[in-house]
Amino acid sequence: MKFWCSSLVVAALLLGNAYAARAQTEITLLVPGPMGRETVDKLIAGFESETGDKVKATYGQGSRETPPYGTRQLVAHGQALDVSIIFAPYPPAVASGNVDPKSATRLARIVLGLSVRKGAPRPDISTTAAVKRTLLAAKSIVIVDPSTGTLGGQAMDSLKKLGLVEQVKPKLKTVEGSQEAEAMVAKGEAELFIGPEVSDKLRDGVDLAGPLPRGASTPIDVVGYVSSKAKDPKAAKALLQYLASPEAEAAYKAARLEPTH
Image: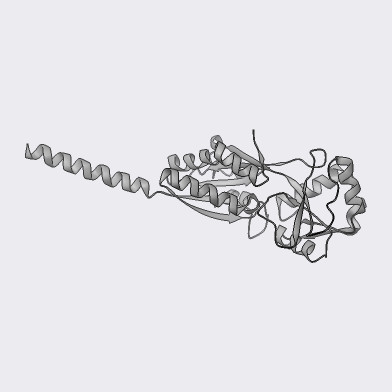
């Protein structure tokens, strides 16, 4: 009887230790900054409250081919975290073997929009034709350098789609990142910024005019992957599933990201 009781005590202790270890799991998460830190931080808090796991988030640029690399390039260079979120296109990241391609989960889409100086008249961007007129009439336009970010490449693609590259070239300025572009708009050094329409990314002195219509811009897919070397694959998958949940979709929509459904 003593042996039986002792065995039960040992088993209970082992189970307790296993549960404690599970409850203390830390999942690392790589996030493109343009998704919006405020939005992602709220989702992380919700996941931690629901599961007891902890999430350590690292924010980077959406795409950058030179140091500091964007999240897509970090994955391709072997620096994927337990869960990595990247912007399309992502073949090099997937081909690197650093993420599980079967875990690919589309979370949302980044929509491009126009930003103007706070208090400036809102330009008409209700239709593709209106966007074209607005860009032609602008005295200056700033975008992220296409060589340093997905959003800059997408902005340039929009200008190509509208057939305006040559026409706006004399007044087109490129900068390293969205913050620099917004600073130029806030100071009146650029009239328009073609960048991400994310509600919590704006600096003081800048207003969102609104999203560009589909005829002027194609939204950018935001996709999450589980690392092929995740410390706890089950926990990592649970986080990725949460980031694609109805709760997360509502948060993305509130932050002006386009839901996948």
